[in-house]
Image 1 (cartoon, one colour):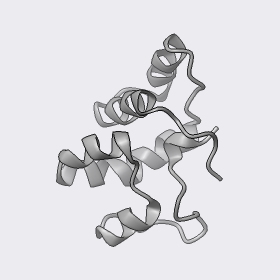
Image 2: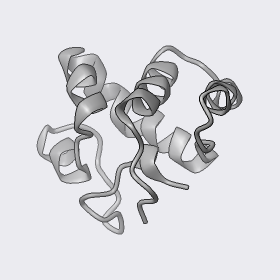
Image 3: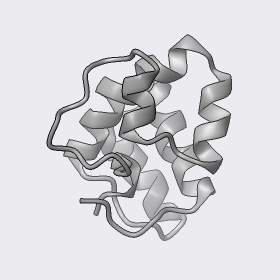
Length: 97
């Protein structure tokens, strides 16, 4: 279930950090510095598994996702990794609490 939507600046920290190989703990330290809630480990793992391959195919996707995150359906339609069937199409793991 998606939590409160994050600001694009917070998504930039999350997506850039995960894509750059930062640990979940380090990303959470950066989020704390800007007074944003932590990224759960399960969300961190989901971004690594599903979003990183999506971004790596075309880095312009990263910039677009910071402003408007792709849905699980968009990832699935892009032919990336299989998305679990029990995930709601509009869920973005960066928004999870």
